[in-house]
Length: 178
Ligand SMILES: Cc1cc2nc3c(=O)[nH]c(=O)nc-3n(C[C@H](O)[C@H](O)[C@H](O)COP(=O)(O)O)c2cc1C
Image (cartoon, rainbow, N blue to C red; front, side):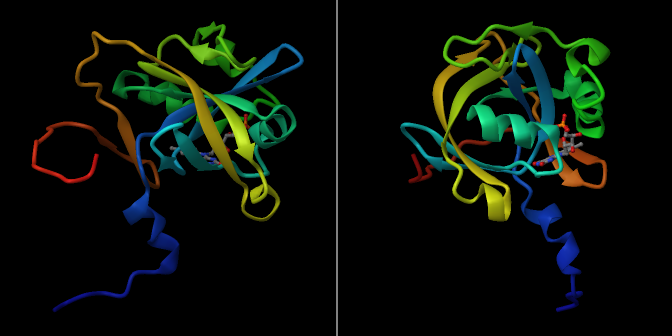
């Protein structure tokens, strides 16, 4: 076995979940969007999603204050804009205007949906007890939207250091997991 020791700093590149999403928030009439790949499903129904939003990000302040957001799921066609939203801060830039994203009113929260994304999940923060220590928020999805014609959405998955995997071939097996 010719296994090599892997630096611990590289571990996230193996486990990084997908897909990369765009997290929208809003406060005082101003909407912001941030790229996020550190998220995980935690419960089927009601759907609970855990996510890490760094306290260095403008989004952290808005999310912590408003306790609302939308998880927007983009496909590969939006990859350039997804990276741009992850390389700039809403403190300085109106990302919707700068990157040509369309904000659409959500039904349950003040944060907007992004029209160009194939799915949008309106969320409320249900637990922020780990936000101070780990930047970890637990979100409950309270309304979900999907664009049905997109049968096989080619979502993007971050492998770290600017490398992305694009969802492709699917296979069907008898899995006991719901
Ligand atoms: C592919 C990608 C994935 C990212 N994932 C996360 C993440 O999971 N959590 C996080 O806090 N920041 C993540 N970021 C960084 C933020 O998107 C970035 O800091 C952004 O500028 C924050 O914007 P804001 O200051 O407007 O909130 C990611 C960036 C990229 C490019």
